[in-house]
Amino acid sequence: MAGKKPFGGYSVCFKGCSDSMESVFGTGKIAPSEMTKKLWAYVKKKGLAGK
Image 1 (tube, rainbow, N blue to C red):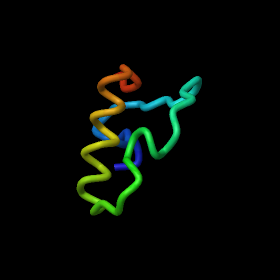
Image 2: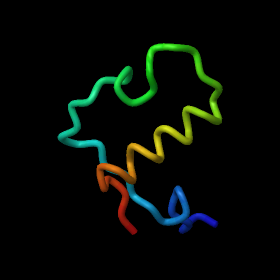
Image 3: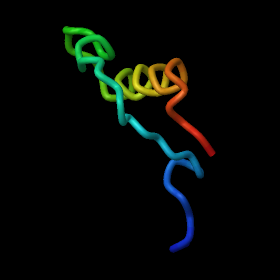
Image 4: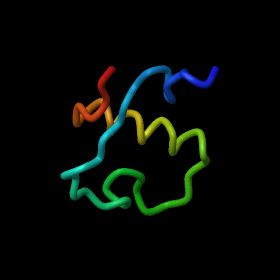
């Protein structure tokens, strides 16, 4: 599987994003699974993922 792309073929580029971590995840403690959900919601909202 040497040719397999990460993230199921998605490429994610955060270049040009100036949002802080607090604006994406909040200031309280969250579980890793919730962090992943919030990160992908941010990526989809900003249109940062492409195939």
